[in-house]
Length: 222
Image 1: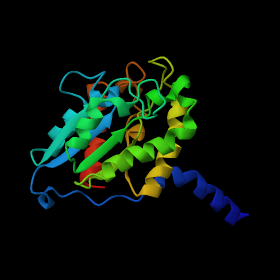
Image 2: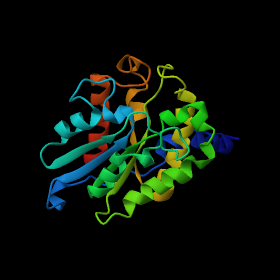
Image 3: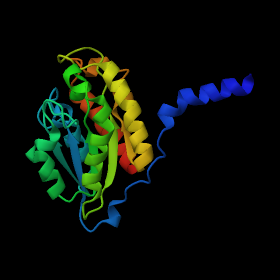
């Protein structure tokens, strides 16, 4: 009985331990500032935060001059190809590929939780895998990190919901494990700080700062 209980307990804690930590990135290993490409939707773009306070902007300030962080976030976009506004069709996606990044941080999925998008849940992992491979196949051979999306404590934007985000996290963790990707837990960073998500979806300046700190820690001190 004790053995059975311990097995059950281990299953409960697997989600938070799904991926082994990545080695820290050392800028000294590069002949140029480490190029970081932040891929995402409005949360990455900076909606909800003041100009200059998006999480990529604040990440740049934390990392310093030996890093070059670029924001390729586009509001309203989905990871799913069959979503209403697929990130795949955006110029920002092509710009990110052409930038030859050394590091790629992907945070998509929030808009995919809308019912008319999430009906394609069965294709989420396949589409995510293809997106990761499109960066992995670059000549620059970037390190790739996937993010557990920020929480949605309220329905601040029509259709976006916490239930879908939690379902996505299971898929993302499994994908990260199978493809040996780094994981940045933006969900944990803000799940107990609803005041930093005033509209229930988009982090304010302080929320974006927490995200930046979380990303910086994983990149430099995993």
